[in-house]
Amino acid sequence: MLQSYEAIIENGQVQWLTEQPPVKSARVIVTILADTEPHKLRRNPPVSIAGKGKTLGDLVSSLVQETDWECLK
Image 1 (cartoon, rainbow, N blue to C red):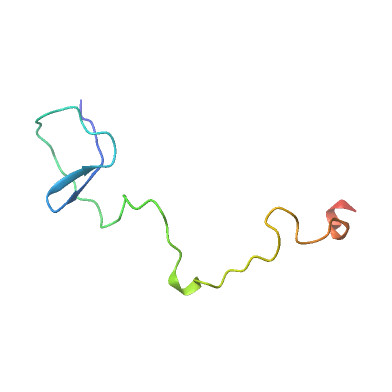
Image 2: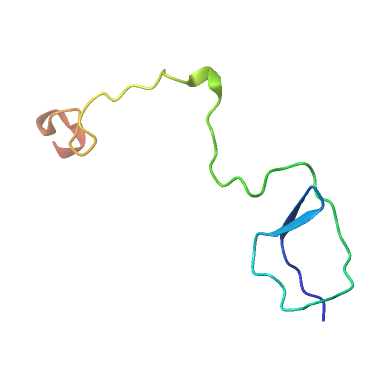
């Protein structure tokens, strides 16, 4: 049965992204994927929006008073 393991090859060295296969020696078939960065887990926002965000109020309480909520009337 064939099994798949995800890894990155950098400078000829294999870095496993999932568990390392439990073998000392094996015949393998390597498929090169598109140049994506699967090991980069954090996404970064575009530089064009840096510093433009603004917090308008308390992150826990409402920005608008409850008496002004039309859905409660």
